[in-house]
Image 1 (cartoon, rainbow, N blue to C red):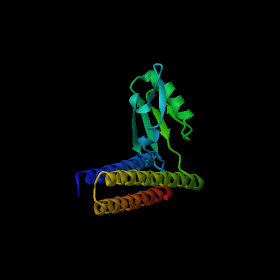
Image 2 (tube, one colour):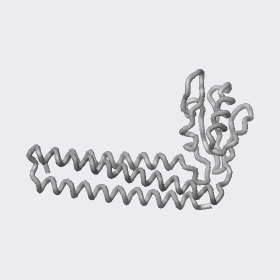
Image 3 (tube, rainbow, N blue to C red):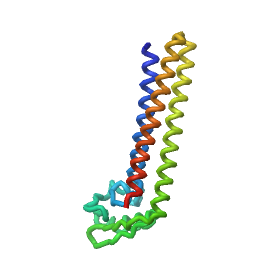
Image 4 (cartoon, rainbow, N blue to C red):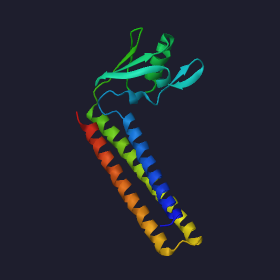
Amino acid sequence: MSEEVTMVIDDAKDGMESVVAFLVKEYQKLRAGKASPEMLDSLKVECYGAMMPINQVANINSPDPKQIIVQPWDKSMLAPLEKAIRNANLGFNPVNNGEVLRILVPALTEERRKEIVKKARQDAEQAKVSIRSVRKTANDMSKDLKSSGVSEDEIKKMEDKIQELTTDFTKKIDKILEVKEAEIMTV
């Protein structure tokens, strides 16, 4: 294979890997019945007049599967952190003891579990759409290579390889979704 063909295939593979990595990161934010510091990753808190990610103003950890501890580096940030967590609509009610915020993570109801699974499926479908978009971009590049003198046989092999990558990454997304659904539905 020519260098241009290899480069297009590598770019497609890199793009598909980044889609899967993004999906995994999104799934870490989904609540699966146990407390996880990642649940608060998307929160922003007002700190000294600027909005900052919560993990830049506090240490967040989960000592056990039922609670999250948020320990601000500056104790004056306790009230803004508490307010941000309450307003985030995550269903958490932080307890402020003057040192740290203690968040008891309530058990999920069956209905809530089904809603989370639905969200996980939507995220997986969006990832598959992104994979197909990467495939389309790579196939468009193959048409450009054809006009620049790469043989039709090599273009055909490249398109087959790109389709093979698309199929593999789609299966990988399905596997990740299956594992996440099982994790969410386990009581």
